[in-house]
Length: 473
Image (tube, rainbow, N blue to C red; front, top):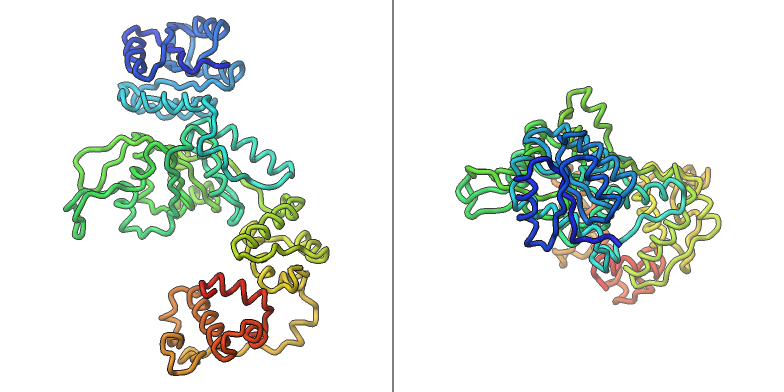
């Protein structure tokens, strides 16, 4: 059993060792000193520690050698390195070798205490927030490898770049890394970098001070402050504009941010995880992404496989999705007919797991008697060759005016004029159409749901599902 109250401090400067020991004393940590690499190895052989902090420059070698030694002989021991201020290249190298974290000289005592407290939580175990965390499904070798790597990456504080096609579960992987590590009881803050207007990015990320611009009536913290002590997940990081890339790079290097309108920087304790479905290396060649920022974000890379790389996991994923849909709708869980399962296995799913979820949600709504047939999936392999030729083309939607779907007396249920310039969100507009059609059918049948379903040309089960989804039940 590792003693979480003992820390090995390796530095040839006595005043540094004493300063660290005094700083960690309030945390209940007893520091054992070592001046050289050989002395540190000897102590590691004699007893166990809950933490190791080592300088990079030692009389008989490098702190990087000690990091490699600990990774080989004491893989569960968190080790942090002390670097010279601004020497990020060496810090990144230490993280790649397996260091838990790094701290720069001259280090702030509060930052040192936060780092040590985080490291000690690694070996506490218990039933914290990560105990009931979700998991990546699939028993294929590809997914087993991803889960094993996530468990390993969770023990480090190194920045991680999660790559993979759209719909492969990059945000879920980021959450699992967060929940499996020592920051599990702190915030996980996801942000879609492509969804923030460029002129608002700096204030959204770093916050702002009262009076810094028109409308700034009070101080406001940014995303970095919201993730304090936890994890900031930068989804679609490739969408960051160049000016913001420069500011993000500085924030990562200095571990500090300056709110808009502030005169001084604020220290931050945040782990950075990022993700993109784009090829960042190709963007760098084309001048669309900074190479220095790429190296800071891509200390360790985690690649999520596409669904076509592990099709043997489709049955397990489909069962889990259908079970969730049943719980959410309050309806009995649907099952897959053998023909439907064969169709799912044969389809390539360019949209990956997200497309599988959408496909099954549609089939769940359309299926008869709780059994999903191949035709309910509406996938190319499920369609009959002559189906497209036998069906008349859908009526064209005129841009001038959408026909009201209910009597003119119900103005709130009359659809707005359908013009290309006025439709901001197609999904919301289609939901309005669906809602109005269902309400009209219910009114015409005096709220007889069986008759309304027949009038709409859908099953009673499908109508129940749609009523619950639209909040009309």
